Length: 417
Image 1: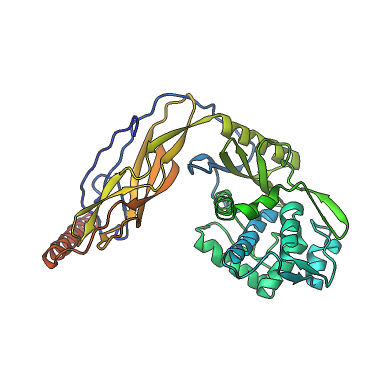
Image 2 (image 1 turned 135 degrees about the vertical axis):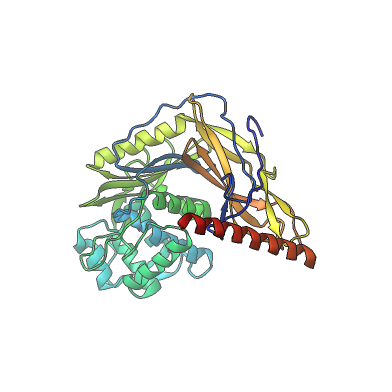
């Protein structure tokens, strides 16, 4: 635990935050407040991007290295195919689908996404049956709309029903700025606008890379041939940007040109999303610039080793009043090279935390800020079990919780009056 200072405070919990207690908010929370002193100077050159919307993280540490209007809900166009893939990948992981399953190409899929559509297609033949693995390659290498529709119809009956699955899954994954209406991202004048934010795109890409690494590998295949038609990989940075190995481009008439991309160099992976650019070439140039900057301009700092206590939080009604929290893996962040980093952190957890608490149970997260900017959020777990305490202990804790709530409510009422 190098070059950091830790301060713990015990403070009453307000009734205005009955479910979410934040550490290191003096006068507002019962928690362990963690403050991190500035690390040794180093300095990263600031980056300016022409992209109106951008978001980039370091995959290993989760550090946010760039965020610019990243929560705006924009039309993702073909980048929405990431959600289609996630639905399929999860079904394969759970054993509900296999790569050898076959899907039939309907007339609707052929007309809307195949050769007659004049959009990106794998040229699937009408009424033919295609293995799921080949459909995935069509999507991931050729950006094929027909393959997406074939899968959507095969899994849910039609695209509208499949979009319901997409939206349900998006909520479970925490994609709060997303709304899906079809499997392809193609505009539909009869449906609400399909939207995703750059933050959601990166979050989803990271999930896919982490949870489905073998299937993710299809993204980097240099070409794919179907129906005797050979097509090169449509990702314009594959083979041209060091370490680039996936994801999608997208274009919307209103929102412009975008891209979600990832690259791995010497075991370090960057994931970036940009949108709102004026041309395909500008999109490529900006993505290559951002990835290069991300790899060269930051250094890794270890804040805590795996299992090393970060802080402790109160437990109500337990055999012990406190439980230490730690990460399962080393807690690391990226900091800019050459610039003084004003790092501080706080533990955030849902409270009051009631006994029993199991060893290894996720209790909260460590939020790390550089100055006022959130750069990382790391899960924290209980390092030991806390059982249910005796009746008198639980009664005292309940009385304390009630007293604190009443006092705070009284202050709130006095302020309002």
